[in-house]
Length: 385
Figure 1 (tube, rainbow, N blue to C red):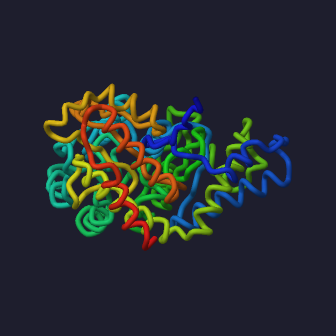
Figure 2 (cartoon, one colour):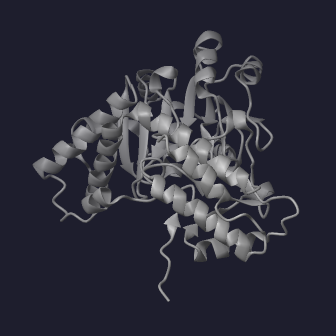
């Protein structure tokens, strides 16, 4: 029997296309190689320009969580007040990071499946003096997207001194965001909507954020320190360690693909295809955790149909056998559904294959669906793509 290859449809890492894989497979060169230095510098300049950043962009070996810590470490100091706005599991991750930093932490939580409003944030910020707020653009535990533009607009008008930190790990390159929306620190990582393998943290800091870092003097963190990285981002030949050479090349190719598609078109494609994909799953009886008004374009949480009798672990195992790797739900959603990513460089073939596999897995798990029903909805939507 021929083994069915699995489509990687979890919320990250996402599928890595051949041209990016080829960059990872290149013969590694010395980190002082003139060609590599030019490639690294060009990548940083592209990231600054594409995200309309008036400060600095950073590409550092590490994870999205490391980028989260890097963001907080460079623009806050022990004893300052920070407001954490959380609408899911990963928004809550800021609580531990900020508490360990010695910040006075307050949390504005939205019920899972919903999101806070700019007005609610405004009310919280009006209670005391805050140095910064954190917002998770897309939380992969809930599939909910936060209205970061509206939040940025509110901050400019009502709280101009508060720094705006945005976790764009599951958003950058897939859900619209620009630094000139009033964002001071935006961060992501290579393996989500950039469509590159795990290994790189990506961070943008506004001019104001860079100035805040300078005002702090010496900070406890070393590897995370903007002051150590800015000279390197401006001139990679000054690198004080060993850069992730092949990963830098891979990300450069990932960014080239984004530029070729157009960043705005990429955002629009994610929105269009997410809506089509969700409609196909709804045709099979699945429901999304997030309401239509706040669904993320990069991933979805699908709850099992009522009365279907589907066992979560058995379904996801069968789905994997049928060719799609999915992710289980977290915390209060655990066992109620599963998570599917639809971000990065996935194409129509991947979407079609995913829905087809879901239909087969449903039937094999005893949930009777009309084969082709979800596919029909998907195909009708994709005709215009």
